[in-house]
Length: 196
Image (cartoon, rainbow, N blue to C red; front, side, top):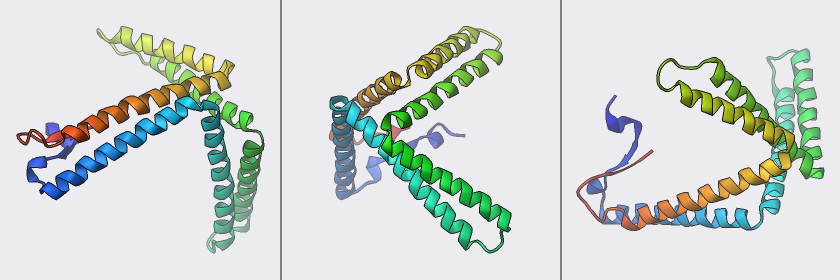
């Protein structure tokens, strides 16, 4: 596997001036949108959590309805399989309605699931320690993952807010970086730009 095969390469030396302007515009616009989204999330984290929660609620409802329609439309499935899919579809719709009516519950459940996954990830890291000089790094990762997971499970709403602010910071930093990359893209026409 070559070094560049794992990366997305834009060789600006092979692009026309119009294509270069298009890539520049895409990088700059994408970066500025990321910065704007990060600022909006930072400014209104509560509203953002509510919107994310409603998006999940709508997704559950739509997914439940689609699954029910597909179950009734399927010809090669048994009545028992159709009934099971319909029951699961109804449960999805009910879950979507509950999440939309009680946003705190939806956010808490999602954050708690993330916390549980982190705990399992930490335990897995500690039970499969590598041999050699990097063992300490796996131990630190495992312990931090377990501690972070426990914190999220104990205080899911606070943790969701912290994660959202972290995501906002990452969007702003990444957006600024991408915007700057768009500004300087193809200025030095001697080597391709790689990402990823």
